[in-house]
Length: 122
Image (cartoon, rainbow, N blue to C red; front, side, top):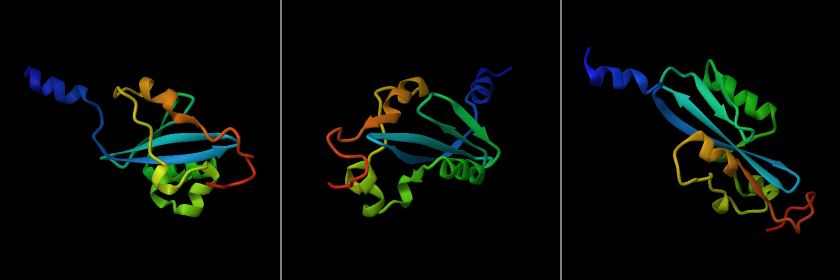
């Protein structure tokens, strides 16, 4: 059998899009990464390190919204206020490596610890 063909089979699903989602829990900002596959299936990596697969991207987005997450792509300045940052400052985590294991510790970020969780000022 052709070794090149085996390598193609081992690469897994083709990811066509990555979306970043945010939730604010007191003085903590929690990220989630949603990846959309070519087949329209999706997976979500959350701060607890679980990678949850969904049969389609709509179901994955609905689960994130039900859990209190907001899509970074759909946010405006007012949506950024609970995170204690301007919209421009909200950047998805970028660990040095490419693995999910290296990404997970970066999915939780402390928001200004001196701010009252009920107030939003930049």
